Structure formats: structure tokens, C-alpha cells
Amino acid sequence: MIVVKIGGAKGIDYDLVADDVAELVKVGQPLVIVHGGSALTNEVAAALGHPPQFVTSVSGFSSRRTDRRTLEIFEMVYCGQMNKGIVERLQQRGVNAVGLSGIDGRLWEGPRKDAIKIVDENGKRRVLRDDYTGKVEKVNTGLLQTLLDAGYTPVLTPPAISDEGEAINVDGDRAAAATAIALHAEALIMLSNVPGLLDDYPDEASLIHHIPGEKLDSFMAVAQDRMKKKVMGAGEALQGGVRRVIFGDARIEQPIQKALAGVGTVIGEAVD
Ligand code: ADP
Image (tube, rainbow, N blue to C red; front, side, top):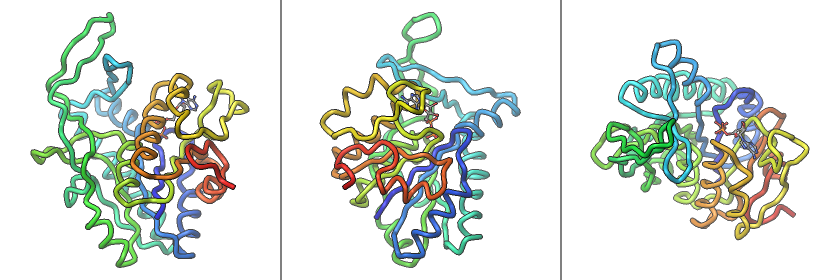
């Protein structure tokens, strides 16, 4: 079992990723796909007159401010165009893909954060209480296994569902990590619009090829903004028993097979 997270940043080539998924599924490799949609969500939100806002937590992480309207727009894009776009591409290539959000069948469940401590533009600490965000703590592996056993390829997207049954925005990279752990995946592949973790971002020649699991913390400083969440997700996956996490490039041919062969940033067990 391999879990593949396809990012939502600009430049990702969904056709190349779908070609590769089809090749792997045809040779009998079970896959679960998780995807993002951040760039398109930002565009649609701006077009709908509700431009994205990002907040910085007191621990220095940036995340999307998710009021109820943002959550609705988020669902339009992630569960709508992004999810169906990937499912359609896979169906065209003979892969019987099924798109599900984390709400469906309580696929991804966890607590909603009832208060988020943030630092505002003026450096002042504030508490947000109307945010719909949280963290995946439980994965409905029974549902995923039922689909996989019947020959379907699940294509999963945030939001997740809170313990109280509300839709909550969760980080796709960390949800993918939770999924890989729950399914005892051999590897978690995170594809984005960069070759991997760059030591001197955005210089692509500074690609970091391998990071042993125990050294991962020291690379947190290299990752900026959203990349921090990926590094965090990678750490969670390794701690949860996934042997290898690979950050790969979603702009090249056979992005998944190349990542599995060690092209990108391999975190954890090295590729021979
Ligand atoms: P996705 O939505 O595709 O998962 P993100 O936008 O969440 O992607 O994260 C990937 C982005 O992180 C890259 O496009 C890049 O702009 C940014 N980034 C920040 N620091 C680094 C780094 N050290 N190495 C690579 N990318 C980085």
C-alpha cells in the first residue's frame, strides 16, 4: 500500500500524475490518493469576494483562516472541481476511482479546535473561536479497505469531520500521514511543484536528497510556510511506523515511480 498526496500548488501536472497512477494500478499496486487545492481555493475565494486570510499561530505555523463561508468555498473547490477533476482523469485512464471527502463515512475524524491562539499583523496575541479547523485522529480504514478490496482507487480530500459532526478544515499533508499510518503503508509520497525539500529555497539545485528520520527536526528551519506542514506530516508518518516519506516533483513524467526510485527528498529509510 502506498499513499500519494498530490498538492494543490500552481504548476502541478495532474495528467502526468494520473498517467502514473494508472500504470501502477494496472500492475496491481494498491494506492490511496489524497489531494490539495490551495491555489484554486484562493482564486475562487477572491472571485467570490471572500479573499483568503492566513493566520499565524503562536508557534509560528501559518494556516488558512476558516470561517463558515471559507469552509463552504473550500468544499466547492476541494470536493468539487479538484476531487472530480482527478477522479475524471483516472476514469479516462481505466482506473475505477472513487472520490470521497473526510466527512463521507466519517473517513477522517478528529477534534475541532475550539480556540486558536494567533499572533495578528501587529504582533498581538488573540484567540479565534469561530474557526472550523482541526486534526485527523481517526481514519475509517474499514471503508477504505472495502473500496480497495472491491478494486476501487480512493481519492480523498479535506475537509474532515469533527467528533460533533461538523466539517473541519484539516491539513492535507497531515491527513495523508494519518492515512498512511492507519493503512500501514510502505511509503507516503508527497508530490508538489518543487523537486523536494530545498536547502536554499527556491534554488532547485539545492535539493536535499536524503534525511534520516532522527535528523528531521533539524530541517524544520529550512522549510518555510506551507513546507513546514509537509515536514511535520513526514515526521508524524515516520513516528507512526511508515518507513519512508518521499517529497517528489509533480511536474515531471512518472512522478510517483520516480519518487519511489528515490528521486526527490527521501525521509527515513534510504532507497537502495
Ligand atoms: P502543495 O499544496 O502542493 O502541497 P504547498 O504550497 O503546501 O504545496 O507547499 C509547497 C511549497 O512550499 C512550494 O511550492 C514552495 O513554494 C514552498 N517552500 C517553502 N520552503 C521550501 C523549501 N525549503 N523547499 C521546497 N519548497 C519550499
